[in-house]
Length: 383
Image (cartoon, rainbow, N blue to C red; front, side, top):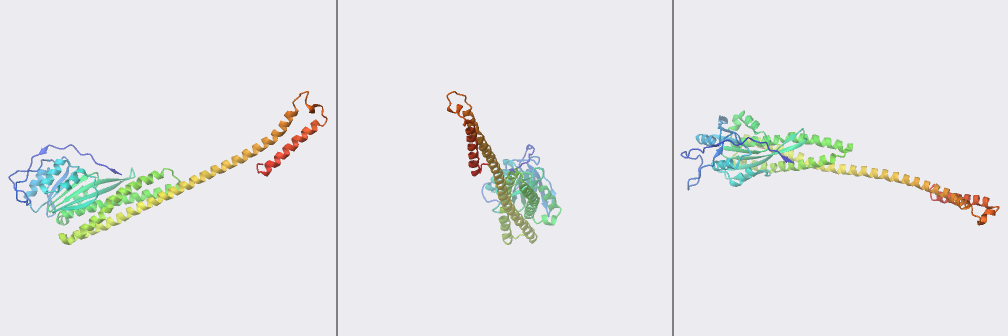
């Protein structure tokens, strides 16, 4: 399975931090003044898009993280939606300082290669998702990783890989401001829905691959075993992406009453949970089907090999029978040749030279030996 990342442009010059004279937006514990946020990069770097929303409508599109922080302080009732692609450590540290993100979650988002999970750090929810898309040309599944930080007035997405297309999610949410007005949780559920909907083309593509594999198996294609193995590995990765989502979504559903989730969002999330359960069951079915196909293919290969061995054995048996016949006739013909050769030696001291019955005796001896050998070989089924 491959995790394919898209290259991004080089980072833009560092933007200055927000003015120190402005009071921070969030309540912080009493104590020394916290350090200034780490300098951040402009949106031309790994920041795909940053936007501020009020009542579900976009009011600003800052061109840097520093500007996003400044404008969000000016709108205490606003919400920031920040999208990043493979951010640098400096960017994540600046976000952590501004939004009080837990260091463990920041470390996970920076290193990536995490399993899907849901963690709550105080008022911040940290979600890891594995998105997938089906590549028709290569007939393979491409996986991407998405990390989401959800707070009271912010949502941060950290994407590793080409999937999912969060710009489409943002456009869809902006077209329904009444839903986006429900806050960052609404955006999170929209992202969950987009990731889960992205599984549908993968399921359809894999189903088509399995149908083709079944045809190849019964058609005797010798290269089908490798295709079965590769698709089985992709299904293992797909299962690792979908199975944890079932428990994650049920965990969110169980917290509806505790966190006062809007009723519309509850229906939204239950629908996503149903789709995830259906997809997870399909993936489990695919793994079982591929295991059965691999067993059937091994059986068919064994049967084919047995048939070939049986054909070789039959050919060897027929060859042995021919060799027996040839050997038998060779022995029969060798006997008179031997007698004739002995009696053909013209030595004066041979007693048979002046024997009147020598010639009939030699002929009779040849006939007796040949007939005897014939019946012996015939009795042993050599002839």
